[in-house]
Length: 220
Image (cartoon, rainbow, N blue to C red; front, side):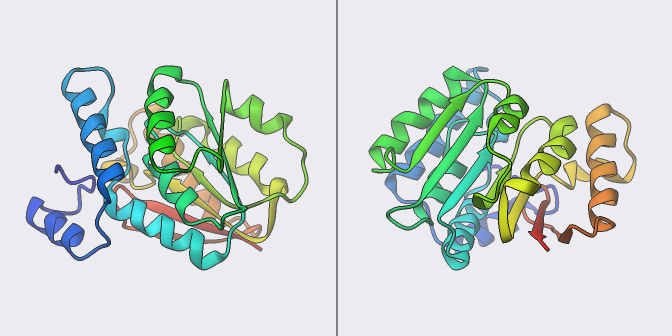
């Protein structure tokens, strides 16, 4: 499997995965189907998170004792599957996405994994859907893996909707190293976001070199 991190060689990526909790049959089938979609040009398969990141997110959700989670950007559903698996039996995950075709794949695998009752998918413009939610502390964990120029707005809208000490995970915050010399709008959006978050008193912030960069925020 191609490394998701530009920081890892193929050999190190294989080692990392061998030393981490392996995907079960359902997750492995989802990973394979998403990869096949990429080969057919139906979807950018690199949008799927790395298996070791998925395992980390499940562990984190469980360790935090999160009961209600939200995800912005679902794609074919691997991240949602693992976050939902880290929630208790009465927990819930709200997923926001715009693509009906890709999330139809997600729905099939959530059903296979026995998670459909924990996951709600809302299709539409994510920022509009987010703003329509009550601006009151609700979510213990959030994951953002969507349009990069929208990250700053997502973070701002999530803040009042998070419980005390809630954690936000932001994907792709190293952006294949392009944060060091931003050229495109996406490059600049991520570089500017990283600079602003570390100076934002609302958050405790750490950027982890996991996959393509994973920023963890804790609501102060």
